[in-house]
Length: 158
Image (tube, one colour):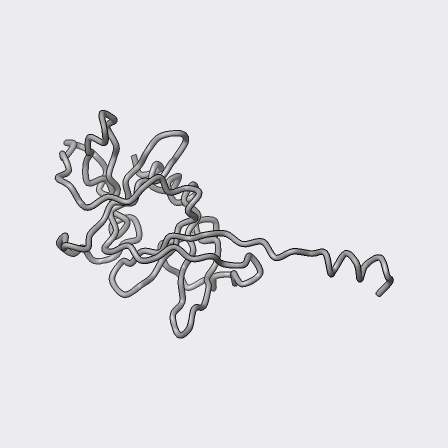
């Protein structure tokens, strides 16, 4: 290694991203906080006749009509009734708000980019483009999702 590359290696700074965690059943997922606008308690959803299966309906969010998508349905997980912990994560998609129904919201944590591992191909309903990767925290594994790609997949069902 030359002196120049040693200096470059020393100057290399770890980059971090912050992730909002949420659960669907026992599985823990994360969304980059840059794509999250806010988190709301579950509120009544107005059904829209003829809407795709993944769309629960719409809500009125401060005068804006926002579609509510059920991530369990999108990921082909069994449906469960709402609980006190059920939340709507409002994300930005193409400059529009979209609500994602999740079982529970956890914490926001920082992850070094180099700590994100490639997600193994396990034949689930997510594509590699929808998954940023996986992160290990203690004995738990978090699946980090790419909100824009996930929303594109949901939009393709409309």
